[in-house]
Amino acid sequence: MKVLWHERTTQVVALSLTLIVATAVLRKPLVAGLESENYWAAKLDWRARADCVLAGDSRVVYALAPRVIETHLAGARVLNYGFNAVAYSVQYLDAIESVIDPASTCPTIVLGITPHSLTGHAMQRSEYTWRSAAAGQRSAAGLMISRWLRWCKPMRLDTLARELNPAETSPPIMTLYEDGWLAFAPPNDSAARQLRWYENAYADGPVDGAVVDALLERVRLWVKSGIDVYGFRPPTNGAMLALEDRLSGLDERCFSKRFEDAGGYWLDVDQLAYHCPDGSHLHRDAATRFSDDIARAMQAAGHSRHASAVGE
Image (cartoon, rainbow, N blue to C red; front, side, top):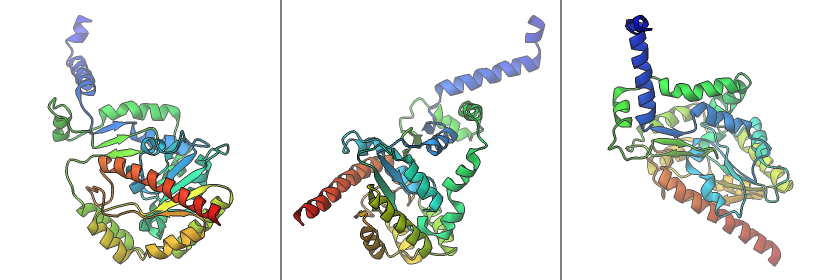
């Protein structure tokens, strides 16, 4: 053993393991909570788990915190079933419905409708689609390995320095929660990258009328089956709102009218009332406030319609 210890290879391995363990214990990761692959895999496995399902693209993933909404819904189980760049495809609509518990006494679906989620571009790039296709190839062992390998992934030295800085008090840039919310707290505001991405996305074409028709027909069927369906346009910032109104082809007033004609509740959202640091995703503090506002709006809309029905 003494001879083995004096071998340089042994010393390097021992030092490397010591540094890895020390780093894992001392660092404050910029991404906290669930490991990314486990976070998305858990969502894909949800079946008959919720009374209220929050659905949509990454703006919903970042913007709606189930734990906040649950405080307004009297014990209802709420899950955020959003996926990045998701499209409202038939496959995704089926999956949303499958997350609802058939035994629920208050089945509810909340749809965050972004213009991009209704485009052919989203149909081609939806994270839900490709993650679903890859789901059959993953294993429990593989997910466990990926959970621990996160500590061995390469990183920039300045990132490591920040994570090991004992004076660092800011929250992680992202925190992935078991209820599907992804809390976002970037160190600075920068919207240029998101604007370029959406400009390129809409260059492939505006909102697809066939996608809109299929979504509204599904809303009609859900309502007919006894599910309350709410819709809203997730908030953003002025530059993104102007870009989408100019390039997406979505007439929100017309869409919301058709949504309500299908039996859904449309919730009007002040698009510029919440801090949106990258032009697309809400800061975690703004998301908490927005989740509270959405829950209150849902209650008001439901009570208003039921009151009108009683009056009739």
